[in-house]
Length: 325
Ligand code: CA
Image (cartoon, rainbow, N blue to C red; front, side, top):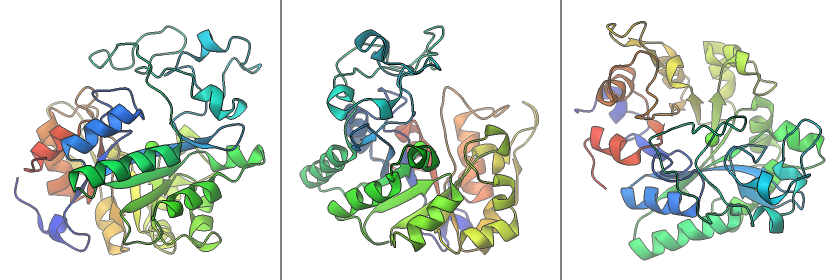
């Protein structure tokens, strides 16, 4: 695919972000999933970060454990009254004993993605520090400079428990040399107030990405409709370097026979000086009505002109960008 003017523009060539690792092939956020994504040639490896009871930042997507681990079997009786086992209720020593598996519906046990990896093996949740050491080791051994793309998950939830997740994440990244915009890291968050705090109060000089969801998701006390507008984007540009919207906010297909409909979001964000890295491409869960992976990539990178993409399938995205590992 030839590069459109926008992909060769102010933000350089588009980046491929391995969403939770090579999660199309191996259980998300395990070190094997990160190693595989690194080997496939991702530009950045994603870490979602939450805290344990003893304040260890761990690489894990959910606040609760039961959809991707054997917590019910290992720690019966440790759930809250709401029926969930929370990461924040367990110490790291206990979290480290859990085995991670492919995501299943916690009520039925049905796999979220039936065609993926469904073996049960002792794959562990690791701390952010261990994962950053792992990436450093992989880069040293291969000569690559694969970056990290770290998300502060649910900062308000952590603050309500008396914990400052952002401060710990920023400090851990700094320990591993990720301190400035030149250092191969992006830091992301859905919570706009918190992301602004990371820049202004914690004085973090990393590249920051404002994630944008739908207000209906009730993900954070953030008005995503407001942020997506031109005034909102100008506000975001005051503290962040980019936005991470949901793919349907960038391009959508009204029906299976329809052509791609590109919104003004990428152009508006670029006009505000913001890079755009949408989430998440999956070959086994294409955007609604999208005909095939190639069409999705052409719409995103060609017509819309995004600057990067979160993908569960690093190899597919690289191939459709005309790149090899
Ligand atoms: Ca994430």
